[in-house]
Length: 225
Image (tube, rainbow, N blue to C red; front, top):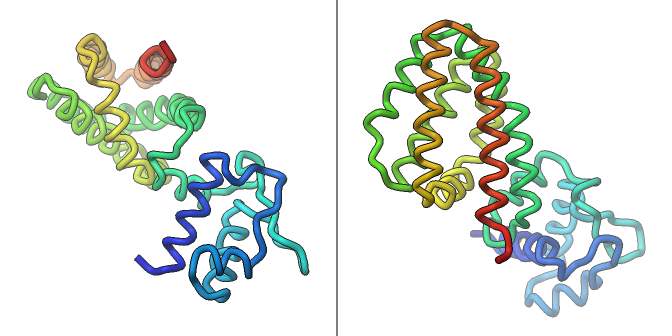
């Protein structure tokens, strides 16, 4: 990894962990270069990248100001956050699940109407999935990608691909509860029935309901005891 990439990663971790607070100014280029033991050109390059991706605001002859990434960020901000799994706030994960709740019904409906036989084939594979968290996580990820690929709009798959590594890790944690694996198996069977009937509206409602249920389950799993 390049020195500038390491420094950029460190900055993002500090922002996500609250060490660099939104609205405050970070140390000067000279101070950062001294502290991190790198040249000022490296610091300057990193700060420019962070401004481009919504993390910082740079003004002439002033120290850079930390942005509220929820308000000033962009798609690159999301990509960076997804690469910092140890620093991702649970709030961010909940928002991702809510985004999935809004996206998944649409692409699954499209897949059922556009390529029902592919959907049926994908769901049929659920019958052979080993009853382990890892196996369920891998199958569910492959299923989501397959459903998105079967939908007419290719943008869904591009969006989904951004979350691959995080999705697998979160799903493995989620599926540690056997009751959640059983709930998903029942969901797969109901969705297969909708695909057999080529009922896009039914599939859309099933997915929406399951996504809502999965958010509640995730909140229960991650609640502070």
